[in-house]
Length: 498
Image 1 (tube, rainbow, N blue to C red):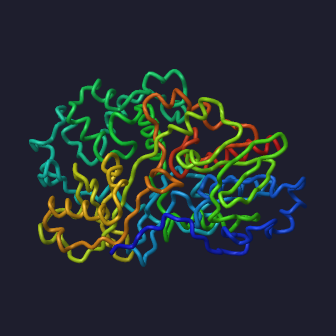
Image 2 (cartoon, helix red, strand yellow; image 1 turned 90 degrees about the vertical axis):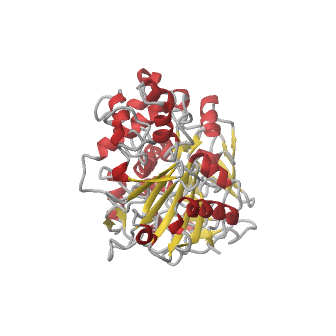
Image 3 (spheres, rainbow, N blue to C red; image 1 turned 120 degrees about the horizontal axis):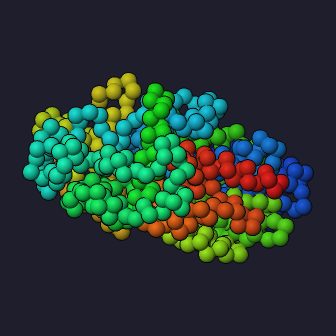
């Protein structure tokens, strides 16, 4: 049986300041003396409590501590990193990333943090985009080599330039042509003058001349964001394109942390001065006249002058907020989309690509989504270390409602049907469902049509003594750099009040 991904919150003592749930449940529990009153004062456990120990929360906490503010970090799970999550080598060879996979060259905050805390950045490790010439397409049950795609009968693109586009990539060239934003203006997506583009990518691409089948293939299947081409705002995709072009200004920088990207938040956490409570889910947050009260699910109560909620809105929906946020902010918390994602990792028992003479990776329009041969051994860069079925959209939602054994069986059976050489060559070793994780709700945030104009400008505004951070609240950047940016903003907001 494959290794089952832990979805619970069983705690462990990481070091003295990292306190697991249950360390002391009755009365007051042990905190460093400074945090019990000398710094915080007025019966507060800390001046600021940060809820969430991903990049956004940790960056907030460290920046505030640098300014002399006492901070406590509260984390629902038993580890640091949030949606940065690296699988251990003993589970999947090559320790692939379950979450954020690579940093662009312009990820200045993230790369600076890695250097500051002694981590080495190595090359990017392809996950859903293979190397040149290593992709096979499986469409309507037919296996199609890359070189045969432009002239293939199943290629739905009518324009000559578009026929060269592989189905494994969205129509980025067309997005770039349609992009209305001024060059290098990363904040344009939130401005009212571009609200006309806050429509579905399916509608916008169809208006631009793509056939319905081409829109579905390029933007609906294996969608990197959302569930399909009806569910994603074109305004978001234009910002994504602008951000990608911006990152291209640093072609030789960026990469991934050696040993896995989770090493970055772990290193950040080691430099915290205040306490970090692991395995401590929050049940309620109340903003009062002189403090914020935070009630944990186990009944413990914490008090601070200010709080930062640095968690996905999909997780925040589980927490009662008193008083209730304004209508637009409440709508954002309740409705912001999170991309469905299921991953099944396989050990490779036999070189199936030698059996059938085809490329090792395979993009499909079927249940397995993107089947990728990962090459994560820097000492032997041509060796396939493991394989990954990376499944998004409606297929991921279907698997989310199945138990682990049934999900693995369904995906594996479909892989063997589509490509017979895989049978006997693979062994499933690890399953991960971001959609089923109660503290994530999906792989990352995405904007549905109409949502950017509805609440992007107000969703991260402070609510009483409560502040918000997380990649979904970033104004300029995306991904890991967006998370770092949001933590910086939240820290500056708090310093204005303290």
